[in-house]
Length: 126
Image 1 (cartoon, rainbow, N blue to C red):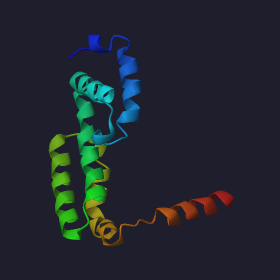
Image 2 (image 1 turned 180 degrees about the vertical axis):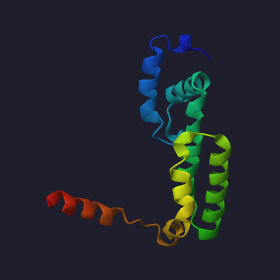
Image 3 (image 1 turned 135 degrees about the vertical axis):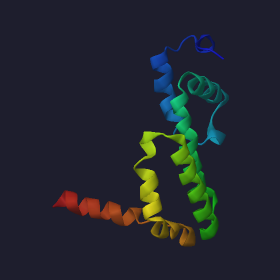
Image 4 (image 1 turned 90 degrees about the horizontal axis):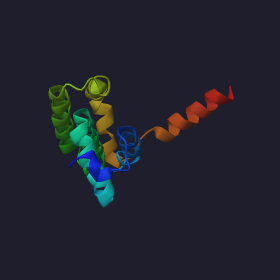
């Protein structure tokens, strides 16, 4: 596959248009987005870190058992370490350092996001 297939796209346009579908899971991509993703991953190999991001997302969306969640997080952490992507150097250790608290999500599938949002509003009000 080459850029001629998307002859209306420059490299800059390819990157700009890819940003939106990379926020979605692969299962929600259109056929055009799937083609664009293949081209993007071919031209920019570092963009394959998308799969690591989606893998982390999948753990929290699809797993309901704490033990399985813990095992999947450990495997994900190992993949991140092997990948060498510097962009994961902050989040991976953070998850490992706070895994017990994070794993509580699997108990009732809720987060403290609403409390954090409320606290942010109070700080903004002050």
